[in-house]
Image (cartoon, rainbow, N blue to C red; front, side):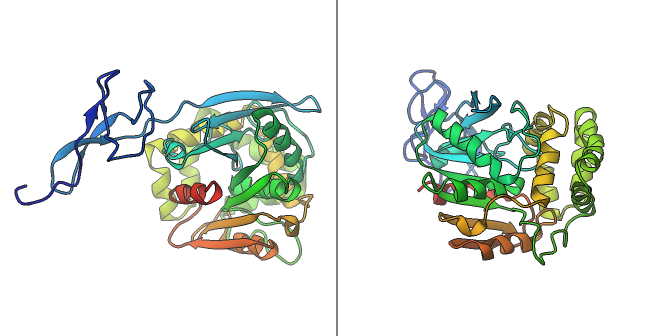
Length: 348
């Protein structure tokens, strides 16, 4: 368009594989799959002047997977994402979840400069079950994992059911955890707090089954596990129907649906073992005191969340000595847009 300044700078070509890559003026010096400097492959996009140019698109670092053996003989499996020399963050997945869970844009780790290690909590994926575990039990597992990976000090981040486990590490590993991020976390089921208020009916049914005991929650979750294996898309649609419009829109994105199916199917490799153990642990004493979390904590909670209502995040924030609560207006349970900010704060 004559007279309109183009907002996109020219791209250059990689000398090692002749693929289009961005110039240093367009993006930071990341690497593409050929390990040539300064680069991701480029894709056609339209600039503000209406012209087509080739600009950087993210090519994520390869996910590195591994296992470590714990002192009690159990195996703990993990996935390692982002630059190997990035600031370490131990990521605690939701319920259900597994090491296969990640941000829908895998390049977020590279851009943030973080090395995010996601592990299979006991009973999920390839990690052996620890029957009867409480939330606090995770700390010894993460201590061993950090030793295996050579992490002296590190941040923790937990989303949804991972929130309590991240806080357990912050409380029980105060000499190693630098900062803690929790998003859409449940609160302890104690005192006069109405744990079930504001939740979807399916969530209420699930936690009532957990309150009834191991046999009841195992029976309740069994049909969900079967549906995940045979009709995973149907289960996604069933869940989305109970959620607010922002979450429905997120779950409709193909990359999100693909990630969730992979994540949840891996989570139920051992049937509902990890899932039920999480639910039982959440509804019982957690095994540590939130007042013992010395590290700085930032809590993100969605205004419209009906899986972990904002009252839960506020309750947790009230009991932490050094916490900042952030209500994300107009959002529900899925706060992927906040991850980059969370990484930047947790791993400055």
